[in-house]
Amino acid sequence: MSPADINRPGSLYGAVDLGARKQALEAQARREATAAQGTGDTTGKASVIDVTDETFSTEVIERSMRVPVILDLWATWCEPCKQLSPILEKLAAEAGGKWVLAKVDVDASPQVSQALRVQSIPTVLAIFQGQAVTGFQGALPEPQVRQFVDQLLEALAQYLPPGGEQDDEAGPQEEGQEAPAGPPVDPDLLAAEQAIDDGDMDAAEAAYQRLLARSPRDEDARMGLAGIGLIKRTDGLDPADVQRRAADGSDVTAQCQAADLEMLSGEVEKAFQRLVATVRRTSGDDRDQARVHLLGLFDTMPADDPAVAAARRSLAGALF
Image 1 (cartoon, one colour):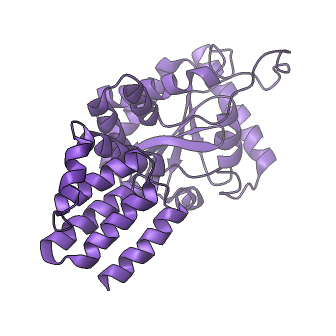
Image 2: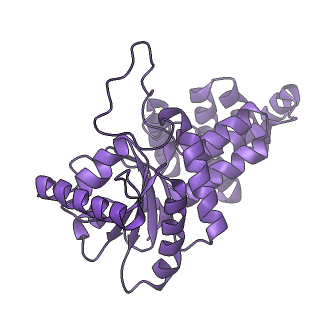
């Protein structure tokens, strides 16, 4: 499985057949009651649950409205799963209800794995408020798994009530109390934004790279990393010197630097047109340098931005 398949999907509602809703709720209640009797726990809240296609909606989606749910997607034949699952179960037991581990046997529950586009295991996904917010794949050692969980809880702290999962019978929100502002973002995205606020571009770059390693299609991380590159490339440049050298149309490096400075000043179309013109009048390595640089500038913008679409058409015309 490519990490690209673990990008943040949209709402998971409706992704899996809801079937047997009443039976699922009753079965879960029986399991939790049994667990409580065996451990002396009277809270009735299990830290580890088994999830199937039929129970995914109630035991993962609905539960994730109150507490983070970490999905452990595994199979009986998977050796790395046998290393990872006990670590997750240990951490879930230690958490005391701050989050719930939901175990999904991908062979027994193909609809869940198909809906989440799981192609190799083990895969771990954190679900909160009906959305997958972060995840990883492969069997990580306990310290890294613990760090993943800690970062997740830190990122979600403002959205969670104290003490973990709330009872379904909890009263309405008190007057004047602010509701959660919406679903959380990936912890690495938060770390990158904080690093940028602190002026630490290297830390921001590392955070974006971690997120892209898991989710290469994540647009926020793609734009963020490209933006960091733009900032680093232009640091220390003398605009007057760049302008002087860019007067020579054959100086491709100067054209690229001028385009970078134009991007930073908000002259997006001008930057794109400059590099398309450079591609049109050059050849060989010079043409490739300008083309690659332009593609890098595209990454600083949303993929559906009209300026990007127009420049891509112009680039295609210049190349062919």
